[in-house]
Image (cartoon, rainbow, N blue to C red; front, side, top):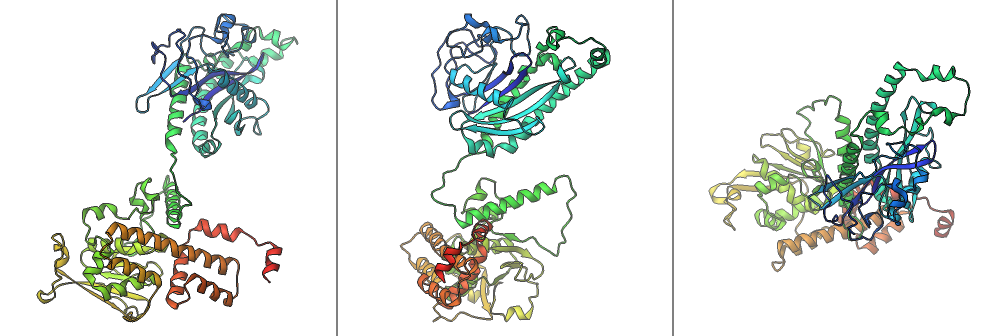
Length: 585
């Protein structure tokens, strides 16, 4: 992540000061620089463009060296530092001549360099301005907590202010802040929860150490009573130089800066790797939006399960798999439209390889009946002993539907109602209610052991697993051979029967057809649900869309249930203006 993390302090003598900062270097370090030593040679490093990435020089100079430092040094002058220049004071983290800290990321060849100030003048100015704003004008209520500010020119800042206990300070506490600066506003805002949690952990550790030192000092020499018994004198003169106590003194930790370097370097690396950019060509599809919503729901459920006892689900209620089975896909692949559920089992045993293969196995008329019920949203029931075969069939059939329209119970020992699933796998001994068998809204595929006279002819050498089965497709509403059917079904069959098209090309045709009809669904949803147009106008719209036939209308209404919540909420939240309503009337 191209950013800078800095620890800032409000000095009682000089105001806001940068104590310690860690930056990311993508260019190679000068010769002789290593993780344990950065030599004082003025080796010039290649300067990188792009704001935060720039670093013109890595030197071991101390900003307190003033005139002895290079004239281009961005650090504050000697007169701006605290009086105790011979020792580590409140305005300085590392002693004069300290080489700083460097960590090497071997995986990415990135260096994380920590010093009191950035060495590039432009970066020094950006960090300095962010430091001043974080400890002066840009403060959250209570003066302790996170806040966001910035602009395109000077970068955007996540700042978390906090207090450290000090028995010798005014009010017995000193004011600090940890800031994260970067030029990418969206990335920084998206990283807010992550940064808040990790920086809060660093602050808690610092405050815990300082509190122990404070309590020990108060126990040995209570400052409150001593101050009350002392005659009034100007505060700063009474302090006798104690205003220059360093953070290492307040926490009694000599390795404080090395630990902060480690924490800041890890923070930059972890925050940079947790979010990745993906190139999307055009707007995300409805399938992608639905999958993202499913994944978000799964994350919320998993967070709710943490710290609480998970109730056991009755075995009589199998889990319904809606859309893609995201819990079995990796987070990266679960957002992609072509991530099939049960992909592990699918790779291990792919009984049905494609829709074309299933059509060859079932026969043209049986496949058309089955596909018609799938597209209409009717319940598709498979009865078989082999659960892998049922899952393979569902993997193939579901490709005809939008992800949001798919509700699967892969394999059950009892019948489940249609409102719970439109794909249901059953074992052979399960009894199906008679009204379901005679219903026009269900189709049954029975996988039986084939007799010798009805053996399925083996088309390929690897189809021995299907050769022993006989597939019987029945429904209370068989599709007549001369029935026109939905337009998309006819186009699917035309693609499947065209032997000049490979399986991959047919898959892409199917994706395009689904997108075409989902666009029609969106128009119909906007027209009927949002605008509440009369029935006559709806019929005209369906004619324009080429979907006036009964089967096409039923298909559009079913597919409307597969629209993402994001799309629906966006449309429902829009309110028509009075002028537009009057113009339509």
